[in-house]
Structure formats: structure tokens, C-alpha cells
Image 1: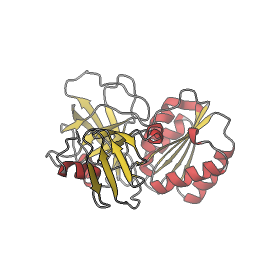
Image 2: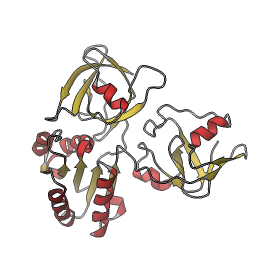
Image 3: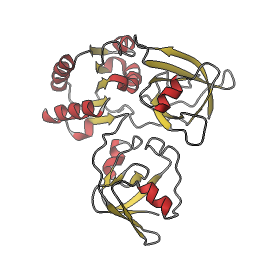
Length: 306
């Protein structure tokens, strides 16, 4: 859908993060509601090669009149979106949820690093007193720190030492039935999960979202197409989607970065090395589908329903 920029406002002292408010073209129209923690995929450019980036929604989730997101200019797409001014048009997909609160949870422990505060803010506002937030950011980069502090119990840190100390204490004193949500740089996400597992948190209560996936080493493997019986070698420097394109196998796609979900393909056999930003933790565990633009085989062979 096409939305119009109505506000663009700096939300950090150094101006690195901007809040972008998007409204329907017709005044008064309501946008589709969404679950707290949801994101939208935005086409960040005007030409066919423009990148598609995912941005968490930070505004009210029920019948919103605006979609609001916070943008840190870390790539060409984000710089383009930050440069938009009131009146400019932006192409946006409907909201998607991969980081929704757990309705049966007794309590939520929410952990954020840097721009990872955006989905955490949405959860904190919705959960209120049943949530506790631990947020670490660089000096002058504390986006929405006051909003988080007024939404629920919160500890805001500007040093890793203070953050690590507070989080260690929080992980050991949560009541049974608490779920942990963490969003931020891959190193922070992994360190938080490691600390939680070390004190006995079960995997079923750990939930993550990372805006940048770790660029771990890639290996070659064989891709088998179940419908035709064809086998296609995939080298370490090729994506599955590239190989399918070369073999003239049609697959829907849009972003090519694992955020939009368009190239989701059923997996019939083999372990998947998931590298997308779309699937939920449960879906990754099941490994019955993959985003062929970025994800790969975790072993020597992968069978897909193509």
C-alpha cells in the first residue's frame, strides 16, 4: 500500500535516529491493526532495484491512523527513508508479527540494545506493569528511553558493565512463567541468551529478533527439487534463489534480504541454516520452510517442494 510521510522527527540527541510517521493517502482512513512487536516491510527507493527493509512499529496497534517507525541510518535503504519529508510517498506492506507477546506468560522480561528498542517499546507499552525492560545504548543514542521508563519497570544503561550487571540479577529473580524477549545486535542477543540458559531458562521461554543476522561461514550443498527430481549444486558463494533463477525455476520474491517472506519455500528433508528476519522461533525449529533468498542447508543436502 502507498502511504504518505506526515512527520519526520529526530528522537535521539545526536539526531541519528528519526521517527517517521506514515498516514493513508485519504485523511481519516484507519490502517490495518497489528500485534505489538510487529514490523512492516518498506520499499526504500523509487526504482526496481530499491532495497526492502523491515521496521518495527512503535505506535498504537488498534485501528491506527498512522504507522510510526524509528529509523537509524545504517544502510542505503535507511538513509533513503530518513531523507523522506512530509508529503513524500512510501510503499509499505501490511504489518507482520514475528515477535508477539505470549498471552499465557506470567511476566515478560524485555531486553534491548541500541535501535533494538523499537519492538521492545511496542511490547512495553502494551504489557505495562507486567513487563520489565533492560535497555543499553550509546551516550546520545537513547531513543525512547523516557517512553520506556514511563511504560513499565525499566533499567536504562549507557555502559555494558551496568547493563550486564542488571541483566544478570533480573534473569535470576523472575517468577516462574516469565518469557524473555531480546532484540539488538547479534552479539547482544547471543550474550543474553547464553546468560539465560546458564541459569536455567528453557528454550520455550526465549524469544529473539535481530535486525542484522550474523554473517556466519557458508558451505556448499546439493539442492534437490522434489517435484522434478532435479538436483542442483549450490556453492558457498551462491544463494539458493540465484541457483533457482539460473535453472529457470520460478519463485516469488521481493526483498532478497529475508525480511518480506515472499520467497518462502516448503522444505521436505534436510536441516536448514535459517538466516532470515521473517520466520518465528517456532517456525525455525520446525524447519519445514525457508527463505531461499538468504537461508541455506545446514548439511550436505536439502530437499524442497519445487
